[in-house]
Length: 439
Image 1 (cartoon, helix red, strand yellow):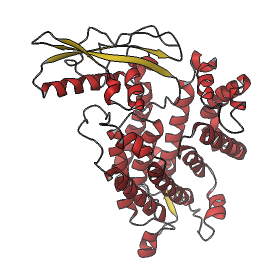
Image 2 (cartoon, one colour; image 1 turned 120 degrees about the vertical axis):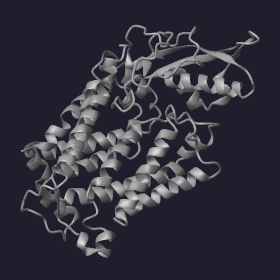
Image 3 (cartoon, rainbow, N blue to C red; image 1 turned 90 degrees about the vertical axis):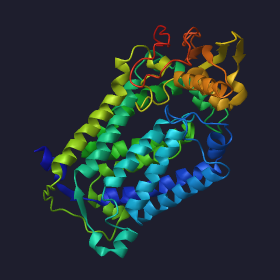
């Protein structure tokens, strides 16, 4: 039964149009990083970048290298849009995007991670079988159909993202308006809507509309009777997010997902007027069907497990950040902190302090003050730099952090020698002090 659900053939209009939009959006994301100055701020100005732990060697290309890098990604995006050497283009873009994602986390964004997942999916989807230069060159590629799993893998991924994003907001500081009020206070200068965004009733509208939207939008899109209403609400929700929160291509990518909920006749009539709509609904089970089913199940078990992992780790994820990334915990809290490092020369007993802000950008310094993995990495960097000068040192971090404007708490054990600590990837790091939950 499960095999029949996955391998029933359906019309591929939604996937074809999605490929075109997806290619355009990743092109805009790539060139936008050049022209908005993001590359300069995130990759050129810093003396070094905070990479994912273990990949500290993965640093930006020198000179204008990263501009060329992003320009090449933009070219691959256009190739995806046009369906020109599609597999080469989408594999190349995906690999390059993953490298940048791992190269820096100061500007970490759940949307960047989401783009990795989508790009990986697009590698295996037959998205170039219509309206592509590949089909023009090789007509034998042309097809009006695809297995049903090609649509469901997108729908299930979107459902997971929205559901966990909704559930994560169910904590006091979000529900009482504290977090949203802080976010909106930074947007008071927005033309026209700046004053509106400061109203308490607007804050609670944003809070509860956001929770309800994330929780119900996929079910509402699945049912024909509520689909058009849900689509209209989606347009408002995502355009509002685009204008107010300025989150790049994600709102428009989210609107593109709705293609997979509409009837193929509707999609073809609007976007692909010359396309034949496939209606035979045959079941074609490939020889590697067991492998596809296994990958399908394992992938989604991981996607469900990752957002839940913080419950197995001691402490409050809002403070410790352990289990925060890759969990769809989007725009949930504000954090600020202060930190300095105490260095002890083991041979001479000399003791001195290091202010990390002297070697970091403002954005890096702010992240360092509030994120334990940054704090540990910088301590390791201090140790390495001094070892190269022949010094054997202990490195201690002294600082405090505030979440959602609550009183400052000490998060890092000031007596822990971070230079000698090993990073725990899958469990709690014992040098983190566990205050009362931030909520």
